[in-house]
Length: 367
Image 1 (cartoon, rainbow, N blue to C red):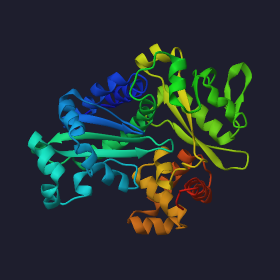
Image 2: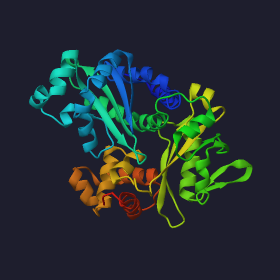
Image 3: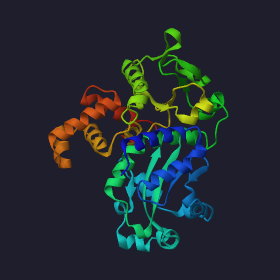
Image 4: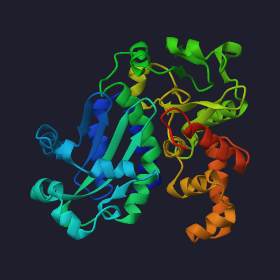
């Protein structure tokens, strides 16, 4: 059993990988070991496919990509078919009979000693599609629910760090300026007080939303988003596992137009980004690639249970109806609702529903 100290160190190393991507293989290997798996994988696709893996499975997945198995594999299709922001295992999609007849498992994974996995998919409005998985020996049996729950606790950190890595195309930046330019999104480097150390030119287009306060301190015009930003900065060292690191930024009309992602600068990442404390990336959500409700829930780090609460609110269900549908206590639903409010920066149930519906409706989007 891993300790809280081990988990905290692992989270630091996950964020270190954001701008030092050559460290991913060892981190993926350590995540895999903590779930009794052989190795771990990170796939990122936008216009091209980029991937990295533990050394223990690198040769297998090099063959998986080069021989065309990746393009034929239904696993990632299944991952993206589920709305919950979660890791999934084979049993969530197939029976044992179906697995035995599945060509990918029958002809690729099982002959190479593999066959059990836990994976998660993340799509973001920028067009990046990211998949994480841990791969277990077939003889080890399926990955267990408690191990999936632990992976889900890491998922927000893995997702944020991999988002930066994907924008950098798994290449180490040579310095802060190069990193901020390569992201191709509005981005700033901040110190612990929120002072802007460096920013890329795309920030200039957001002058109505970003305010430069005294001594260069960054303030957001959206007061709730500003409180969440500086609260997250304060929590990076003391409580990184519970810090709110993704949150909506609203315009003067109360419409969410950005999702802010705060990525702590950890360990050797300081060698690239200097004395910075955090990288703040801003993803536009009001353009033609407006995200679905499910994506927004994922961006806000909602757990599967919290996501079900948000789902219910969007379609107009009462808390009592949500509790009954999920066969859980009303007190549990109320507790989960409080977390949803905190993570989305909302104060009322109706505001959560309006926020998610607003973000989900747009050209090419679905209500």
